[in-house]
Image: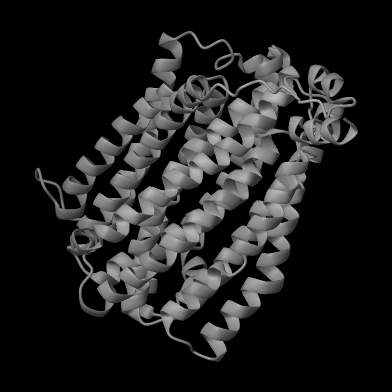
Length: 476
């Protein structure tokens, strides 16, 4: 039998490329999460009911996130592959259409939050005290939604064109602004009237505006080639729109259906005792810390894999993909383990005590196990999307969410009235099953589906190196 010589993978270059992208994105999200933690600590000094109310409002903004993130995923698919192919018109058109779709979602949620806050809060809780506080917060915070989404769209363009530091700088200034204004407006320092949760909402609006200004200034300073080509952003024709939505539709469906599913889960958790609702709010903030690290690898996958697929270097894209997934899981495992070890000072600082502390610690322990697998699934899905396969992970996630998780969580929480921690644990029952299915799909390599001419030409007759090696060994 003949031996097959395979090219050694350059781990040093790979880790360097991942670090250049993932670390600034992770730091940006770490800053944002730190700002949220400080928000929670400041609000906790007012009372646990206020923490619960603001936490439920955050779930509404998470639903908006699900509404526009499908367009972000589709936009990153096109932007990263066109960036690899150096197609300037493709980059500009992709950004313009992505921005238009995202802002449509943001304005819709802004109207709902500012004009119909009572209806929004009634969906999430039946506690009257929490309901009224949430209304006060939403009426102001809703104006931050378009600003938040515009900032996100700008950041996506910068990251996909490998300018990852600019969003980091904007987050640094925005978080500092938010924390300072929280101190001023929540408590009435420097001669201002104490506004409570309304002050926190106003601080969020101003901080988002500051973020946009910082991004704009740095993009001007760096003379970004695509950022200000406004006239070229909206020169898309029917063929491009059709291709964009063909690729985006599965991602949009995924985010919308998963967002709605998470809303149902939050409705169940919102019917738990007030101590549990406060614990959920704190947990969601800490979960954002974990997701922040994942986002670094998600962006690295979109750029490092999507760029090579667009260029036509399919073997490089394939070899990077599975290493990114395992590297992400390793980092996430370290992060969640640290949170569990440091839970006492963290939860105490965030206002947890007594029963709410016990429940919040239970959430962290359950999540420490689930997040290791869940972030692996998410990185699988984002890698597939960057390479052009937006359907496989979407179908799996929607099917398991609506035909397994939602019925189980609803029955255990609303009908059987199981303890909160058991209901929470049921939210992650599908993750191990999907992980196995994702691994099989990853190995086969059928998720590589280029949108550029260079990538499509390279795909003809291509098979993953692992499968080629196996076939050659069998023949020999």
